[in-house]
Length: 497
Image 1 (cartoon, rainbow, N blue to C red):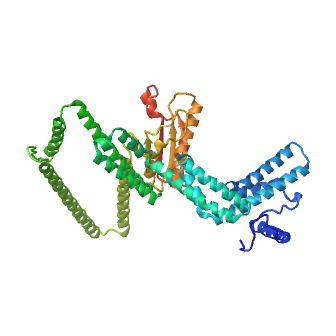
Image 2 (image 1 turned 90 degrees about the vertical axis):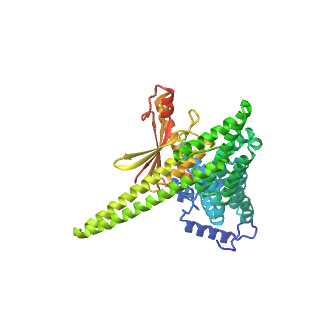
Image 3 (image 1 turned 120 degrees about the vertical axis):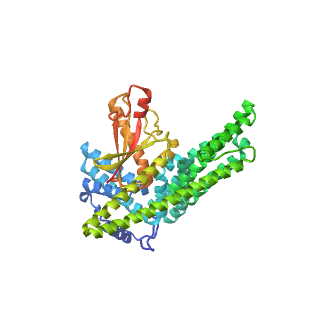
């Protein structure tokens, strides 16, 4: 945009001829129809303008102009259907075209002038900041709409001032939402620990848990987009709070029983003795426990050294086998084709090992109560089914609960282990209720989980899909409550492309 162009629409010294010339040049550069005469503008041309406006997201970045244009177009269509005069229809079409052209121009100006604000807005929407950090988001969105309004009025300087506040608030809302998604479960455990009087009974463990939570929060503030690392830190903090709660409950139970510390000490000695027996050690507890634990540690280190030695032996054996294979190949005069086939086989073996390791990593992400990972085959290719057993929707609803976000974050992390695989989110219900409603509900729930994963990982439409099967694919009998609970489930199916 030329620097000497005036943005203020009420400037008293603007030359009308120059302004008209600028508008014509803008219409030519944007490829827009000339709407200076009523007969030159048709319904199809306005439809094209609506599509072009949607293509530049004018409904977001020039909402007022876009809404005015759409309203005028709909009114023209109503007038046409009710048989009103061509004059009224033409007038509404001209108004629609004018507003839509303004919306396109203002939207493009917004996005080219404030790319960081556009990024902040999109980032907040992706993490559901409007619901998870509603107050901060609404503050930012208020400034955002002010920027939109000021650009539509041509007041770019005032828009710049509002844009700074909008960008700051929306980024803060995004950060708050990411914290809720990642740390909500840890915060619940923190509250449980406080209610259980952990600060009083187990101050050292509680302080360690507080420090772990603080570290997770600081990491998110420093790098909010490194979700795997943040999830790992949150898991460590959650474990620390659970540890404090467990020990606190143990202490309180001992205080209530009034049996003294002897049962606890004897139980600890028994566990040390069981480990010692497994390691073929003799344990004695008439002196410092440290002597027994040192012996156990030494035995474990010895086993580790032996394991490393065996691994070295295996590596040397594999190397020797490889050398023998090479010699055998020379003696038999094997061709280059045979060697190439051998390499292909080795690559296949390595790929299988890599796949096995990925499956182990994905399986380790979920506790038995959270879900299960099933390795299977579909259409002759490897496939993985992630069954989210603890993902529970409210009755009759497809809305995700914030307490399910930690589990969904693990599901996202599992999906990233197979970046080139197709993802299908499947929804299933039990046999209770109306079949058609169950089918729709299963589809809606599958869509909700799909959108969470798709937006969180920025996946294309081709990479992920969702389907609801209703009651048609039970995994347990529907005539018992436990069976119906198993059948009401979400499964993420990963297929090799």
